[in-house]
Amino acid sequence: MEPFRLLHPDLVPQRRESLQHAASMLVRMGLDDTVLSASPVHQRLARVVLASSDVIEWKPGHDNGGTGHDQCFGVVRVGGDRGGVFLSSILIAYLDVLENAARMGTSIGEDSWRTLLWAPTALFDHVLRRPQVGMTVVTPCPGTEYLPHERVQAGQHLYLALMQAVRFAVSGVVRAQDDRPLVEDCVTLATACLRAATVALAFACDVREEPPPRIVEAAEHRYLWQVINDVRAAVPRARFEQFAAALRRLNDIYIACPLLAAGG
Image (tube, rainbow, N blue to C red; front, side, top):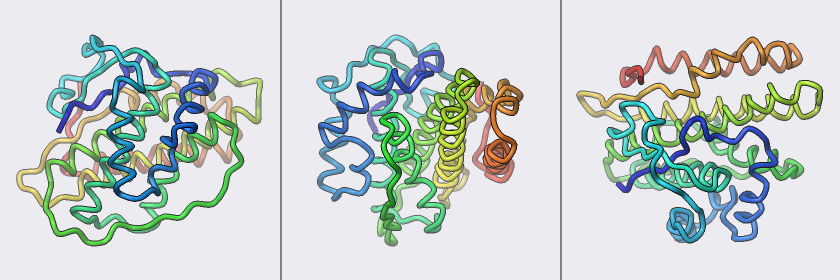
């Protein structure tokens, strides 16, 4: 599997304005969240285009921003067009998960699958201020192949990318304390991405391999605990409780999943 490009943690965008240009470009090219419901042929083509340096400007040289386990999971930390890299890494990770699920099947249920696939639509809705609409979710059929290594890689990549989306949304909460509608939009997005990240980890754990491969903690997970009190102060109580419950469920996956190892 080719290296998975991911932003250095310090380069994760903090305002939706910094993502709007890249998001608009991807929409014009038909490479936004809608590719996740496209045909397999379209999805394979979309992945090739998204990974092309002709579309998204990325610059190597930020490997020191990752954990000691990045190399194990084929993750390369990069810079460049932060908005473009941020969004393309999320979409590429989703496309890899969808391909693996189609080939191998999954025990992830329909409700969890819906939770997983809602996050990128919620992200593009938030960035582009689009009205929310319904979505059609197709649960993968039982697959005939057994690809445990690719499963763990794809699930872990998606988890890492979604945790960067959580960091982006939480930064919006902390920075927009005087703008109540924006605060609520940001915490809603953060909660959706947290829930999806939990499913992504469960997907990575959905293998029968012995001994189990390791799944590592993201720097963004630790970041959430550093700013949790700021989020609590900025967000209405009911919204905060939803966010906190999503964070607790993610922690439950860490405790329950035998594949977990703490990252550096």
